[in-house]
Length: 312
Picture 1: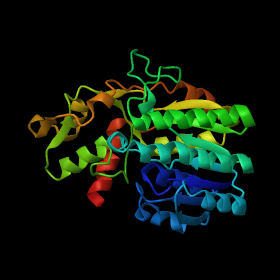
Picture 2: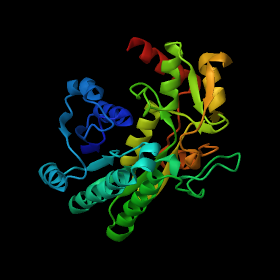
Picture 3: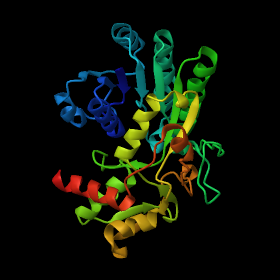
Picture 4: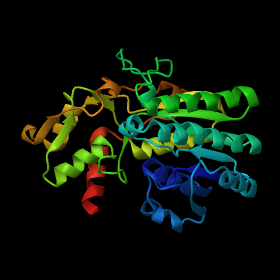
């Protein structure tokens, strides 16, 4: 298959590219490096299927038109986006342009070339979990930040192309993903930040009371889910969740990593209005449609991520 991967130099994108290359596909990566890094894809250059890395934006319509016309992609995995909640609150226009307008631009090129698109959304579109079985795709949405709002708008656009043009489209909502190659700074995920601070003997800072829970999905399981959504016609026109199926409070996560309550500090929340109290995923639809299930436990995933950070 000839595959375009937007956001392929980012954290999850890098792992998706690796999975695709391991399966023998031809991969082009488009990324503006606002979240990603060329270092993330250096390992990929050794694969025969790796075709090209283009530093460019999904807002550049001329670039997208020429790319699709030249290569006639079979699938587009669209991961390129602004992903930071606080950034979206401070500057909603940039997030809207990248996540909604950018998605429209990619959709139009896919429509013109009958290219299947797998759109990466987020669990942040959901309201808090209210039952023990977790959040299914039928759970209420609550876009509590411009980031989530832009993603919901893009989701609806993606699905409209399925119904209006019979374009094969899939909306995927992975829950909180972590693992090697995730940023460990302010824009990184909680696991990467906690592990880095633990290794450097720094305090682990928790926003708010720390009782909020997260369903933490290891990145290789996430990448396998993303790839599978592109190669199964049962996924077309669907919204599909992926998560571990177990949640953990941020307090418990911090203690699991440090085993020392004295190193855990609580600080004022930077965006309490956009916090989701409980995130727990119901992935039964992914199992039913794709045959996907997570393989890596939280403990194993934390160990793998810590070992990667220690090597770095």
